Length: 266
Image (cartoon, rainbow, N blue to C red; front, side):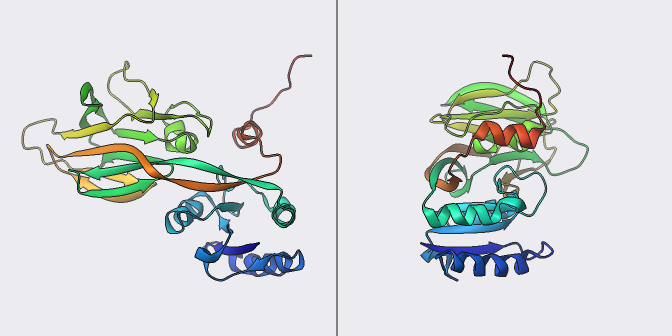
């Protein structure tokens, strides 16, 4: 098996850790390649942001996250399990999970992929934005809010969760739409099938207001919307590939990351 180490150079000690793990990987019989496209697995050293960058850079190559950051939902392998993870790879004790992605396009021209979420939010601090949302061509609602989040099951534990959205299991065929600080108390997250098509139109609060909306894919500014312009958000044809080690349990990950406690009643 060929592995590639992709380290976040801004993380202190990440490069040194990659070198040490490369030696350990070779000791376990793994082949270390410098070309990620030639690897069977790309091992990412960093946090969730680093994993997202790796996924976008190496679509089609399975990615395994070694957490050098903070919370780390995607980078689920902690420092204490780095060697154990390499042993699992060397013994073939892992599976590859296909994770759904979103595609966002403006006026049918630009198309950008997102593994976690597509976020529409205000560019100017302190001002809410007005967004019309249609689903499969049917108008649903106008949102006066700080923005909207379209999240995949993988991304449901990221920005959407912090804004009050629900947690979706990775295998769910769903997408969640979560308003950010809406002015209407009745504006709540929506969970829908992931084969629907969303259209979001920027509406000025007052005619000619000129307030622009930023469209972010996995936290990176992808495009801007002026008043009257729209974006379409759909399920992408391509998927991200994430490595899950033997014994991986999404509920256990949630319990550890969210600090759930207690035990079942016997």
